[in-house]
Length: 404
Ligand code: C6P
View 1 (cartoon, rainbow, N blue to C red):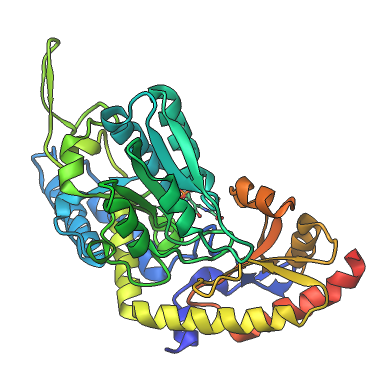
View 2 (cartoon, rainbow, N blue to C red):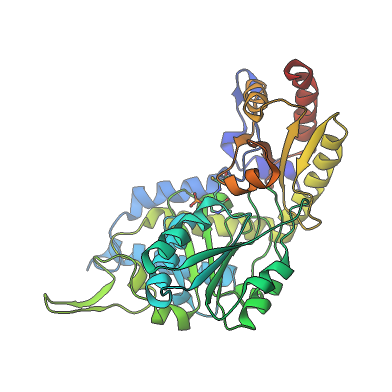
């Protein structure tokens, strides 16, 4: 894989900030977009813009066709059994809220339990807390060890006849840990309990096969996989989606409306109320094409090499600690240097042209687990290079004494 030819597809990378070449290491927050995705958005608004599924005219027909083609592309990309198991949302957050609200309404009752892990993003905690509050259910939490590995024995101990669902991330956005989803699914399914996977940080890093994982729901965002903001996916198994009530009411999700009674549309439309982000959905199709053309396995290999290299070099810096040392991890490195506040490190790195994220990364329970206020987080994508890692290392070596 030629990193130069990949980088040349991302116009935003070719610029200076504060007079320094941009080193973009905030890919877990959002990835940059290749020209092909940007072109698709322009083409949609220049030649295709119209509302889908309803117009009797040419543009509406073409836009609908491309929208539904994207659904089939997503189905193939994650190997779902049916395209109607793919529901378009605004992103991971909306996907999880949809499941928590709808599944919660249908299956959660007083005294029931929902299991999440201690390394979840707030998006996979708060929607479940809201659902539990509404239904009188309780949240149970799977702990993780110092390295950032989930305690599966504890999970086994938490499951009982009151547990209705297990909701865990595939990859932690703070620790980088890749969780053993197949194993978690086997444990939960042996009790007849469904599993939701937050795939926000997995989908751009390695191949995801929902049938192989065996999960019941899989949620992700387009903007973290080289696609546009404003579009995401909720994959759900047909059998469960059929039993769940609509999340939002409005146009498109109905079959018949009278003041006495409304009947709902079939899957997936039952869960897609109102006008969707058609252009962004088409942009997601281009992002999938970009990943397939680059090769998902090539992306995984490149990012692993970069992460191993960066980890090794970072650990050579005096008094630098990495949070998240699981054997199975993706290209996220959270760290602290000496007693420097992460925000100060991030601000100084920014002035040197290096974009990282600092803070709790919407995972406050992880920070509480380690007793720290936050971390500095560098996260890599397919277009990042060893030279950029070297720039980061020299920058930290330069600023660490200033902050000691
Ligand atoms: N994490 C980060 O910098 P949305 O905002 O809906 O696209 O994704 C939410 C979300 C859910 N789960 C995980 C594991 C995530 O990492 C995120 C988003 C970003 O880490 C923004 S806080």
